[in-house]
Amino acid sequence: MLKVKKKAKPEKILLGEEVYILWQDGKESRISFFDLRDSCPCASCIDELSGEKTLDSNSIPEDIKPLKSEYVGNYALRVYWSDGHDTGIFHYKMLRDFEKQQ
Image 1: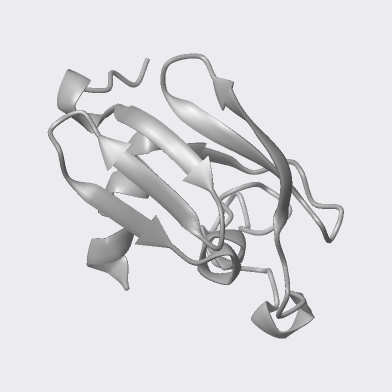
Image 2: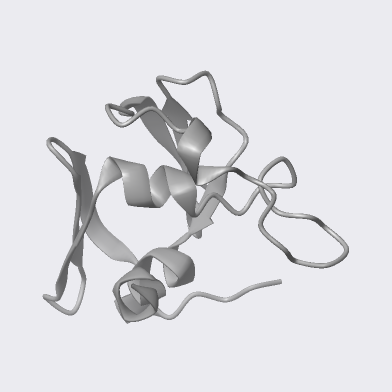
């Protein structure tokens, strides 16, 4: 089981003009909706065997937005997108490391 360190858990997550995350250690993260949708880790967007991205970034509407979100246990966030996609589960560690990847 993936263990998330306490500091890696968000204090709060807000969906406004972008995804805003306040982490328990005081760090703040901001992720655009497009970038988060484009990095979806689900099996529909990433090949399960190779790990290669199969999602065509050009297929994502520029005005993509979350319709709602929900916490998954104590380790992740699930987002329901305006393009109908809803199978991506974004682990907190992935969200925390997101800015390093950009």
